[in-house]
Length: 117
Image (cartoon, rainbow, N blue to C red; front, side, top):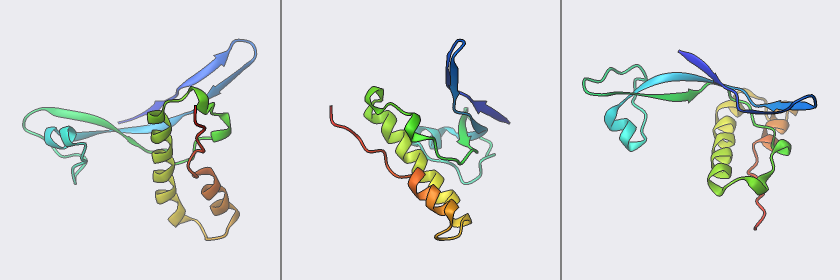
């Protein structure tokens, strides 16, 4: 099953911002879920408890100039950096080195520069 995750902010009558990602709902076994591991077979049936998780389908960088890093926690920034790293690893092999698309992907997936508070 596929669903969408659409966090957003809307200022009534002015503007709205939404980031939409498609997610696949996949089964994981109890031991793998407890260890944070993914089973070799996503559709693996488990005899005890069934656990579900979201697997990201959308592989596009999140526009960083829309982000106010001053209100984000280190954990949130770490998640965003890890997401961009995953996007780069999966998408970059599909692009030609030195192409405008590859240059855009490299820049868009750079780690977020953090300001010390």
